Image (cartoon, rainbow, N blue to C red):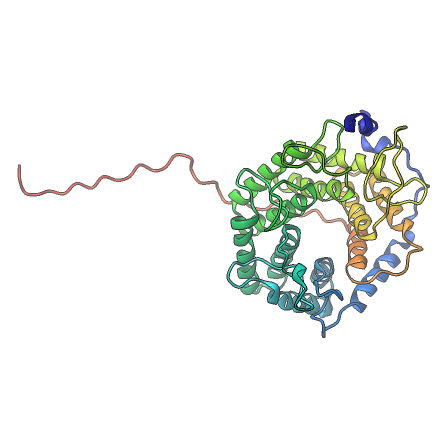
Length: 385
């Protein structure tokens, strides 16, 4: 029954740029103003009493920290950099000093047990920010903390066959979204250290997620222990794995990773884009006639989708992808001004259009020789013949 319902998700053979845009092209004239407005919203959300870029629920905003580190690197003023590093320093209180992993947020009361969740996506994004903080500041303490988080990830959250589990406690099946975020961060950590083993595990994780979660209908799905489909296709799964694939292509040069990223972008435009309201729906639940049920549009998910499309456009040079990113934030123009992480994700997406980056491939250390060196035999003379 599921295969019948999802038959409309099968893609045509045309490239993503061939899809007809549902709306007119959005002029980029106001992109800079939008970007500055979102940055202003993020700046206004900084609260030193709460710990910096920390939401009201006690969770640091990784997106706000990432944006602030980027602006602190690219701009002359030091306020962005100081605030980013102050938030990271406060976040250190959420790290397990013994194991090395981060809990999700600060505990609000004695009954608040959810605060102690140790999630892969949270730890991966904080690992990426620690790497960026180390590079921006040059302080070795951020590298040491990154090493601790990477060590915890390797011991607890990593699956030796490839891929990352969703959290320290719970199901061991692979979720595309958390794996995409973890793969992206794992590549950043590998690039910072030059370790080819880290790079190779990230690539093996991509292959295993693709083998476990990619469906012949050209979409990533969440599956249970026995291969059963758990939910309808989720927007975040396509977006986060798409970003992981794109960075793998940029830094490791595997052409199939770029092909897979372009395929996921086409899925977004074909099956997740809301042709009436604009933006992307959070899941693609098909009707019997092949159209998609109307679903919620979540601002943060849409912002990350726009960023993925903009980053892919920077690699492929396809203007239709940039226009799709612009359509996404234009669709949310009438929404109330965002604050904190929501505004940061939009600013990061807009920045990927205004000033696309092309980070050079890292210098990887030579892999260890597959053939072990033969042991040296030491012979002792006893004096006897």
